Length: 518
Image (tube, rainbow, N blue to C red):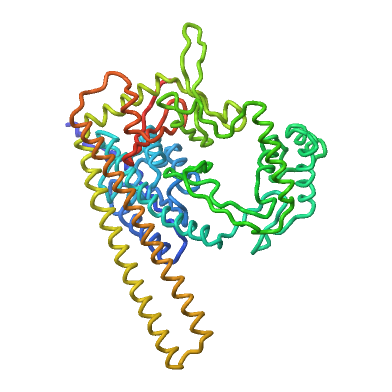
């Protein structure tokens, strides 16, 4: 009789999910680095404990701000490993640890999803693999960015105080100067070039001619490159060459993009701040001469004749160079159409590669964005309104109370100092030094309280704008066409990153992304 031996099937190998973790701390102090070590140990144990997971590594950035992804090399390395199919799932502590920049956060999420890589945010309990909509993540990410903006505001206030009292250090010298560690000092060879430039202008030469002559003599510019008419104009209008300095010529907006200050922020001037290269008489003569030439050519600096002709005028910002967009009419094969173009790209394509965006595409994108808010206002706007109403106020009041306690302690210290002096225990010299230090400290506390109150005023404005947008969303039907009044009412500006992706930065503080066709 034949015998049959039954052989059991080999067990099927179960494919494990390759899981990595991302950690970040924004400063290099010991407490933050200890927090980073804790995060790393936690995730290594957590991932390794799962039998259905395979540990794919930990990526961490030390002492790096979360506002811009380009500065976080470990994050970029993790994305590269995702592209190389080494990672299936990423775990991170919170949205703020992942990114404080709304644009970057959603851009990275979308990029990873296209690679079939999901992300889990522990604090918010959000898994991008099971999300029905990106709107909630967009709102939470905007809140995280607002927190970063609050921290930035505190830093800005400290810098502003140094602007006001003249103690800010100008450590990046213009061409013609060097920084010796404490002050600006003249660099003799470069100073001669500066004098030559001003002399040439007063003798009748134009900026293009001067730039060509400097390049022909192989004289390097500040950054070692070639001279341009724009560089020459910048030197001619720079007050530092007469020994003065104007602080806050530029400022950083809520998206951490730097802009030229044309009145949006206060500026502070300090005269005789450092040694002069050009006399005031020659400097003023050059200003009068360049103003006269501009007038003859019909060029008005900062002219606003056409700036507000359309709803989008002055409100479209280039994500590459930070300049505004200009409206132009393009001639196509079958139609003429309006389009918006970056001013820098129009003048110099090498300086900015951003291409135009059609006017009708921007209008349709706004309609789509607003319709999404109308449809999902209960999910998006109401929770957002509650969050900024509760968190920001409570946190600000706590900070003010702490500073007021410090002010009381400061007053007690000054009173004690006065008593000790009147009783003969402290001499007048020591009293003056210590009392001045305490007075300066008290001024700093009061300035910080004022800064927090200013920030609270900004939150009140956001609450008001959110309430206005919520009322509209609750009562409105879906839009069928672009409404210029609604755009002006709800949108602060548009950020353009490429021809298919733009961000609407709303007055209420939210930033929402839309895709558009080319």
